[in-house]
Length: 422
Image (cartoon, rainbow, N blue to C red; front, side, top):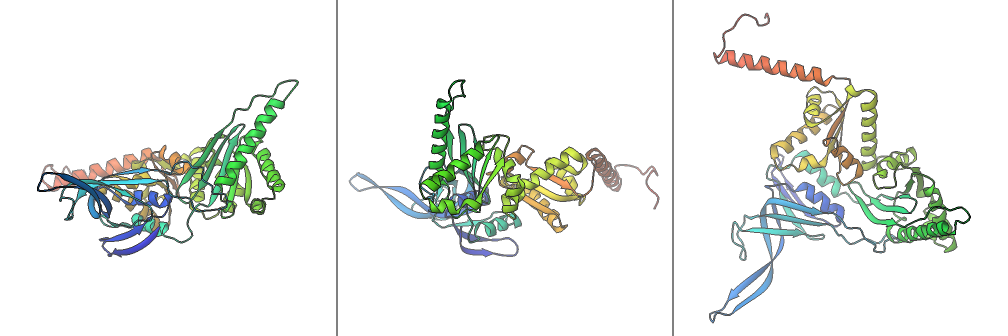
């Protein structure tokens, strides 16, 4: 995404002007805009005029509108079969609509009228945050405007007759194509029907890979499957590449990694990305760190549950006590329409980081983020064991003590002398 202009003060006031350029940029914009924010962008309005004779005429005008946001609607990228095998830039297909009330005078739209803006790729818009620019929003601006950002990994999760072809970037998993080919079982006395169906399936997947996977620009291409389909498919791909003298594909051979997954569905990606050979290749990639962090949490939950907490209230208690070593939090939680709720989660991230802990913000457009959302969207790995029930009891006792002190101060209770000695 292009940062056209940035004017943000130390107190969080101010605005930024951005130009989204691809589907992932549209996802970033969706996460940046909250209810109550001010968005200024180009709009097309139909204007109707009536002449002195009573005849009417209508025409479209392009004008800039400033809205106070009441609703945002994001539609992710659609699966596509556009040619992209050599790494050509794919046209954006995600859409983002911003609805709200017009808050600045305009020649064509009355003040206070409601309108819906279609934010489009390669068109500038200006964003002013109603509650100010917090650290999470500024961090997303920095991440989304870095040069060289884009798809990093291609993945084929497959089984007998089924395959899902995906592209993974830092914040999104885009399913480019799903393939489902009937493959009959092997029968005694003849396997020609089975073998022909498998050949047809491999050919379909191979052609899809040539169209959809920019293997020249990716860091890695992962083939994952429950059985031996990945090995057979891998052999077929490079056999065909050799027969057709596909030099770019042959040159990318070192990037291809075969790993096991328990399922042939897209959910198997999380497991595949945790494989040591994949993790080593993608060391430092955001989504790889997220996957490893979630795996570490699940292992901790199974072996030392007093160091693995999840749920907003419980994790907040652990953060208050400075016990969180790694915070896992979904970006869904930062899209709350309530500024107080959003700021609560922002403060949790800042508190963990200020104490030297790690805060991983999961994208809900990745499988790992969707799995975290099943755990309420927030979890933590503690640096030392804490019993939730004991902590909650201590919190209740402390609250009761403070409440009693306040009531004594207000004269609502008499001191019975049962307090602690000075």
